[in-house]
Image 1 (cartoon, rainbow, N blue to C red):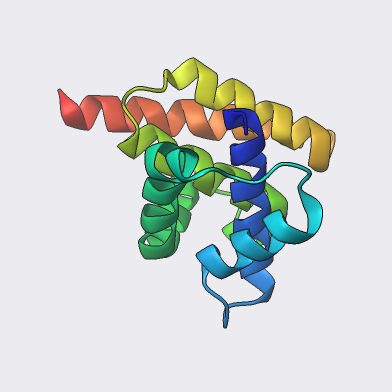
Image 2 (image 1 turned 180 degrees about the horizontal axis):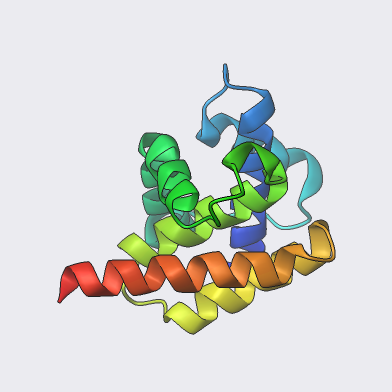
Length: 143
């Protein structure tokens, strides 16, 4: 399975988790993969990309949402953001923070593409702006 499909699967799992908190992200991912994906994840896919992201996404949902909130305009609240946009942002933020081998531009482009595919007309530019702002903050804190 290509990484683009893996991201898509992760975003769908995070989105579903907003509705089904009683299931883990891993359970949701397995269910979505089994029921809706034509191709299954292989063990090597899980080890290299999916598993590390699932682990961080499971632990850091509130931290990701706080980071997003911190980068919103003062007139906006996180409750106004479509849940699908939140799912895309959370996956991208965790990827930026923990997967150094994936260039920032690739992460942003993939997040924007997912927003174009699944969300509102304004979502791609919103997601791009939030991710650039968060990346700049993370880059400053590393220096």
